[in-house]
Length: 303
Image 1 (cartoon, rainbow, N blue to C red):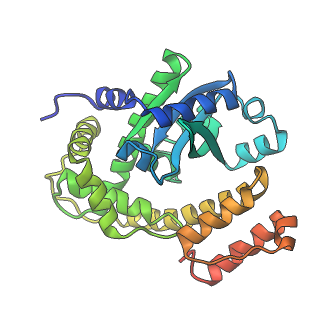
Image 2: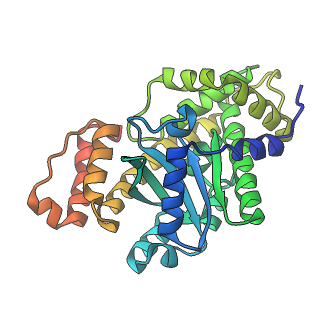
């Protein structure tokens, strides 16, 4: 039985307070990106575990205009073409270094990325999962991000249900949703990761899932045949999502300081392809990026 609407549940979840070290990073990001920052969203393992111990924290900084926030028209242009731009940040907290991976995009692009009409799952698959709005410039920004996250949940689950034949549980639906989401990354996660994530926050996924089914008027207990159109759509998302991931990493190689090192670290972590950069590679990051795309494909990193 649904006791809270999806909007209420997401709004409540979004008010989760960042732990002190994450809060220090939020203040650092507000200072860095200036008064045009509309909202900062915290997500990922740091939020889930409530610590930054041996972790890099994950944030989205949502701004009015990229040019003003980034201070670099070239970076802003790349961000508009292939959003978001991703940066590495450090700040000091209680005598130690806090590290974060920070994606920057406009609030408008963020909200559009949650819509059911958006083919790539990058945003709606990520923000259907737990997240917190750790800074909002005003009530409108808070409400806009909350509504976007509500749409993300409905988009992900609505696009996943046709993949399951017959009746299913809400747990089955979430596990399948996370599994197909991971399949769009450079290196698919083990199937057990989706199961473990849902199990870790089972109450949250149950409440949010049932509320979404109620809003979508989907009956999980009904008989349903496999939708081959949905199957092919997810196969295309797998190819497209991995290509976009590679392109974003290549973009990172020349849109910010240290970007090539970050891109190589990320590629090695997610594709398993070991890369050694030469001084020539570092001097020509764009050409290096193009070369890496073909190498990753040849060595199986984009299978």
